[in-house]
Image (cartoon, rainbow, N blue to C red):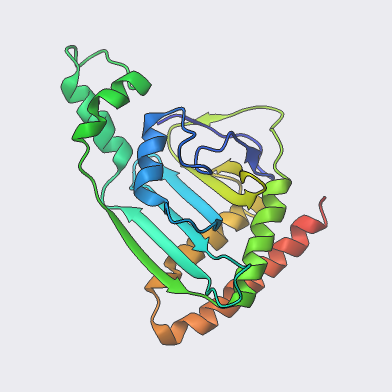
Length: 228
């Protein structure tokens, strides 16, 4: 699947495919949103949706209503059992009269979506409030610094990561396409990937992992705050 990439330092602003779930221009994104994102009436914080070119889609986010003092922040990690895009593409190809020339746009996607029978694996675990706070702060800060690139790039082999953070009236969103090592976007993806593995850890391992995540987030937060 061809996706836009671009600037290697900042995230890139986007329309918000994975903010409010209903606002989707592509039925593929709608299906990903439905399978991976929670529809609970709790704000999703620190959200990252991973769309690799050929591997299963996945997501991680923090469910936490910090206005309720007794509410415990919970990390949710979700992964498709198989690549939704590959399955969708195969269904479109199977339905096409001409297997050598067919479109995979919204109309074709809508036609085959009812046939899509894929499940997602979900795991979740509570995380320390102090870690949740610094992660939430990092997501808000780095998304607020998203900038459009001077020159857009496109790729077929890589990974697009869509980030979202709550804002008044909805979500602020931004994306990154396989950013260069050492950039804030690269480091944010590394933190999101570490966060994604958190619910699979043994209970005795989580406290140390939570502290490590907080340190990573504080270090990157200091880095991006110095580049405003």
